[in-house]
Image (cartoon, rainbow, N blue to C red; front, side):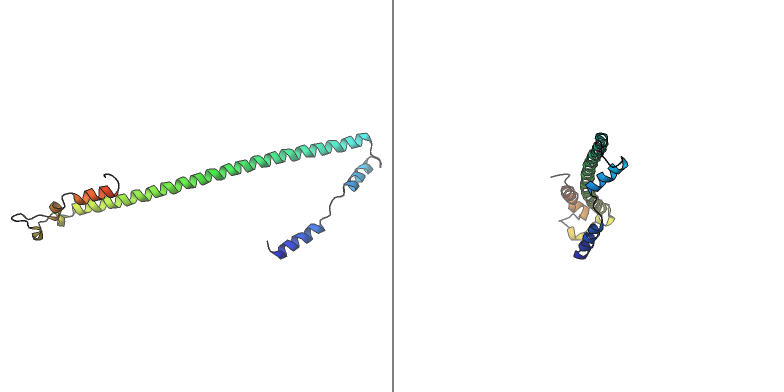
Length: 148
């Protein structure tokens, strides 16, 4: 709130007339012919007691609503935290899936099944698949935590 807004609010508050308890009682007394009897005072006290009771109930209701609001906010915060954790797990699972697919594609690629002269060892010629000996699969499984 800016200083200007504060000043406007102060001026508006000054414009609102404040009730005068004495004049309120005097107006009430006029209803009973200008004098307040014991019965009139008792009526005033009953009104005050009812208003106090109503105010107490409203305060209790307000406290209950505040407590419910706090509980709901905590529940929402917990739900968001759980959602964030589940999202991280999902992202991790998606990354693991991509790594597995990459490994399977390599093993499924027919080019890796063909013999390669650059891998000649004496009389034998090996394919990249044979040269790998499953090492690529073991590394991927280790990366995603399936084996140690």
